[in-house]
Length: 306
DNA sequence: GCAAGCCTGACC
DNA sequence: GGTCAGGCTTGC
Image 1 (cartoon, chains in turn cyan, brown, purple):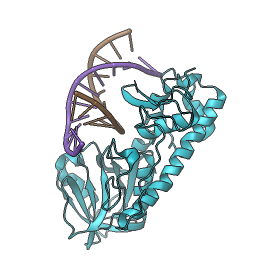
Image 2: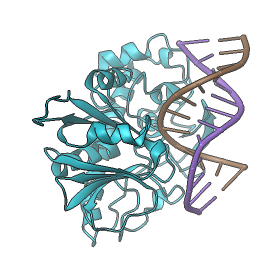
Image 3: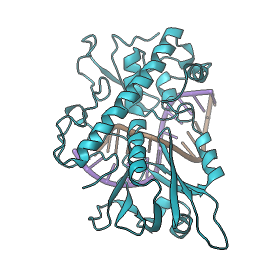
Image 4: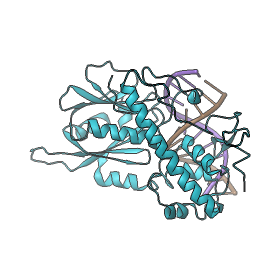
């Protein structure tokens, strides 16, 4: 089994105790970055010779249009902003009507997976689109049991516009940008971190982890964070995401290796999903509350409200 | 019935 | 600029 990408459940890896409550690790920025790197190795520079749409509504705008917009394209670039992947498509056909560069935007939602497999491999349930590469022998498949994901093929300017609607990437945002983003915001910091238009890439899991690292209560008004808290939160976001990018890379390698090492998926979550457990820092009890309609996990003792 | 990410619409 | 609720889907 050759998977170029992030897949929540590999074959042969042991379930990770810290994730046992929620079997699917949601694709947030680190998982999407892992997918991007995998695609860079396996798909960049290759030509999508045919597209097979198994489920029309995944393509927005219709299967026929989707197919004709992509077939014959070479994957000339792979970008990521936040949790959105952009496959840049170029055409070098000799036809009378040359086609302008286009872009395939992919959002994995909750359970989306992009996988490169031999075309002969069994097609798993919930596989919605298959992209045949260079006329075979393998293909890129999009699979998404819950179908919260999005595939959209559009012209380049339109794709840029869509990406511009996202806030700065959470791995790239500078401290001044981050502070500007916080300024004047009266809502809960947790909600703001999950607002993709403000900062792109954080989901529920890493938002909780970053707030835990920075010792900030999730309901703190974003614009009222002290300078020291702004600095430590900015730093926590970067370090939590960087660590996760490293670990997902590891999990990916172990996934293709059937003998994957135990703990391959061990993203050590210190707050998320640990309600009722002792805080690893102070021994307090991790609490779960709802902030902005989302479950939030924090330590009431070391993440004090201010 | 709940959880996830993201959208939309209602409302202040 | 905010919040809140509802809807989508599936597996636990």
